[in-house]
Length: 267
Figure 1 (spheres, rainbow, N blue to C red):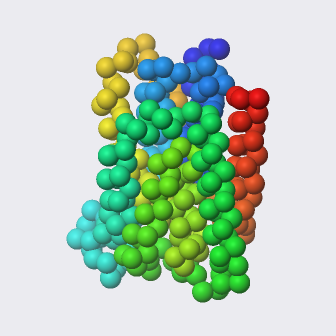
Figure 2 (cartoon, one colour):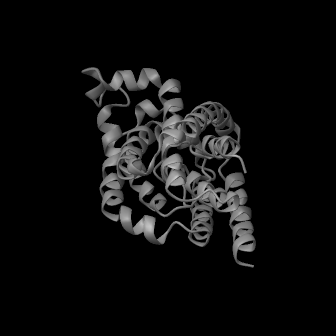
């Protein structure tokens, strides 16, 4: 298959799934195996196009991020602050750094992704069941999030170090468990994704840049642009979706994908 077409397909998959609770890493692993897009270039490509998805969040939440770089942005009594973001990313960043090699070595296979998809589905369904009848008491504004809630939601990202679990799915489920509604949870999940993903991407790129060649620039650029555009509209759609619907539909999709993965690769 033509590499430019592969770049478009993988860019679309990344953009669609990066911020939805379906596991972008899981999808990328599965799609990479199906397309035969593996090896050094694929590894760098998968990381590089995540930067395109990150850029879409920066555009959509630019006022929030600009606020974090002001003196007021460090005051916890003035809405969502840089301290909330740090509380949400430090635990998983430390554990992710320490376990990075083990995860890349042992957990990047279709089978482990299928397990992660199933376990993540159960977590999301449990969270929806937990808040049933209590939705009127949930926090509705991300600017009213406490540091404790930010830290607890961020801690749920540790589950997502297992590919297939989904960082977005874990944080959204965690937010429901700690009393935050879906919309505010999605806002916080997208915001804390930026520094976390940026650090992870730069770390991976620095380790793998030596395998790139000048001829790879075009495919990287295509994937980056496609991922940015698709991620932008994916986030806009998801925020509207969360106003009316629950995480359960995503859980059902994940269960189906896990079953399909096992069937396609192992049966």
